[in-house]
Length: 137
Image (cartoon, rainbow, N blue to C red; front, side, top):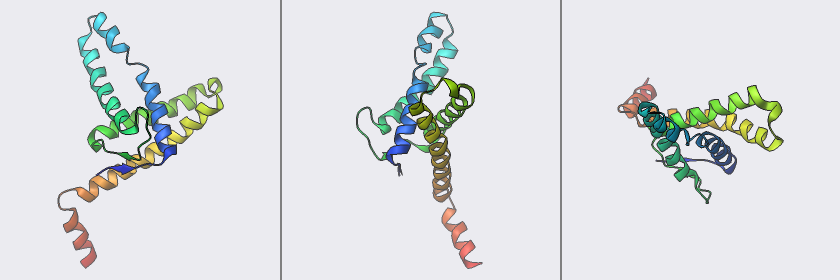
């Protein structure tokens, strides 16, 4: 089951993702400097982020994220904290459009994380039994 998002949230996630993916060249640097563990760690990170890019659309604008919550959650958290950091530490260097997108990300990410948590609770084993017990009490 996917999570439906609106265009504003999609654009905020996309922009945050593009900022994070700008560091993808660091994989090459770590390999070149004989740091394979660091390169592998970045590979795993960027694999998840590229998977989210598949959902967000390379050119099109879908309205549903189908990436599994287990992989989606850490990517959304990275986008969120990157946006918060940029707004707190570099706001005087940002153009108005960037500030708008980063602000949107600080709203979109927590909401999406809450929706992921709600979905996890609703689909957890025994969730139907818990609801039935609560209703009968």
